[in-house]
Length: 474
Image (cartoon, rainbow, N blue to C red):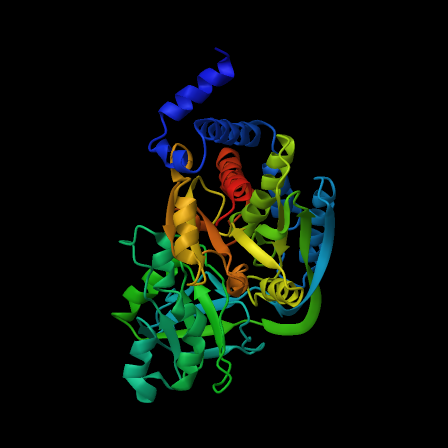
C-alpha cells in the first residue's frame, strides 16, 4: 500500500455519509474526488501565492476606492498577475464609477455644561465621514445632540424634537446573534438611511454608532444613501467607545456638538473589472465565475474587505493549474470594481453578459474576509435553487472533513445581478466573529489576516469549483 493510498483511506474513513455518490458515481470516483480535494489543500498550504498577492494589494494599493489612483494600481497589478496564471485570455472591462473624496480629517467635538466656567468639559471624538456623504463646509455645524435608537424613533419624536439638532443613532449590533452578518444587517439601516431620515424632520446632521460588536476607538466608514427629496446633511460614524461615552453623557447633560468635514461626491470616472478566462474543454458555453471586489474604502488596506476575496479567487486558478486540472466548463476569475459605493462593476458585468446571451452555471464570490472558512451559502432564482442545492448537497460529505457546512440564503453583491440567468449563486462563508472588528476601518491591514486561514479559503473555493465543474448541476 502506497503512502498516498494510505492517506486516502484515513481521509475517507473520517468522512461521513460517502454512500451518497454510489447512485451516481462509482466508489473509484469517490476515492478520486477525496484524493483530489486533498491535493487541492496540500497545494494551497504549500505552494500557493495567495498571501503574496493579498500583501501587495493591502500595502501597495491600500485605500483603493473606485476611481482613485490606488484603485487603478490594483487593476493593473491584478491584470499582471492574471497574465502569469495561464488563462486563455485576460481583459479589462470598463465601468463608470462615481468618485467620492473624503478631504481633510474630520473634526467632531462635544461640549457640555458651562464650558466657559468649567474647563475640560470638551472632548474630540474619533469619527469618519460616511461614504457618499456631503460635507459641512469649512465653517462646520454646531447644534445640540439628540440620541435615538433607530429610524422609527426619529419618526415618533417628530419635527418638534428633531429640528435643528444633530441626530445620534446609537442602536448597537445585536451581540446575541451568532451570525455576525445578521447583527450587521439589523443595525446598518441607521448608517445607510439615517441622514435622510434626520433631514426629513429638520435635523442638521447625523452621527452613527460604528457597525462593530467590539468596543474600541476605531470608527467604521461605509456607504450611506440620500433620498433626493430631503436636504443632504452630513453623516459620520463615531467609534463604539465614543458612542457609549456620548450616550452616558446625554443621560445627565445637554450636549452640543461641532462637526467639520469637507467630504464630497466627485465626478464620474471610468474604472475596470479585471477578467481572466479559462475556456472549458467540454462545455465551454457553461460559465463558472469566481471573484471578489477590488475596491476598498480609502482609510485602510482593504485586506479582509475585500482583498482577501480577490486573492482567494486568484488562488483558485493557481491551485487548479498547479495540480494540472483542466476544467470542462469555462472558468472566469473576476475582480469586480466599485462594490463599496455603487456596485458598478457587478452591474456592468451582468449587463454585458446578458447582452451576449451567456449562461453562468454558477457564480462564487468571496466577500466576507480571509478568516478560516466555515462553509458556503447558496442563492438563486426560485426556478433552480431547490434542485441545484439538492445537487450540491450530495457533495457535502466530501467537504465536511474540512469543517465546511452548506446553507441557503445570500451569496455576494457583485454576482447578485446574474440571478436572472438561473445559475447557482454562492458565497464563501468564513468564520465571521472578528470580521466586523476590521470592516471599513484603518486597521483592515495585512497584519489582520492569517496566512494559513487565507490559503484554506482558497482551497475550499477550489474544491467546490472542481466538483461543480466535474459533475455539473443537473
